Image (tube, rainbow, N blue to C red; front, side, top):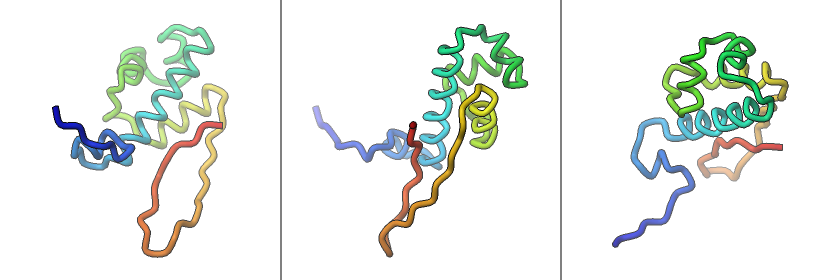
Length: 104
C-alpha cells in the first residue's frame, strides 16, 4: 500500500477545485453543527433561528455545502450566538498566504 503525506487540506489532496474555500466551509459547517447540538434544538427549531428550511439544515449538517456561501455560514454562526472574527496576518514575502479557521 502506498501512503502519501497530507497537505493539511483533504480537498487539495483530492485535487478538487477551490480547496481552501471547501475546507473553510467544512470547518464552519462543523462549528454550526456543534453550536446546534450544544443548544439541544431540533432541526426545525434551528431552521427558524437561522432563517432557512429544515431540509437546508439537514443538508448543512450532512456536509452538503454547495448552496451555502461562506458569508451565509458566518451569519448562521452569529445567529447561534457566536462571534466571527476575521484577522489578516502578514506572511513572508514571496510566500503564498493561507486561509484557515481558528476557534477560540
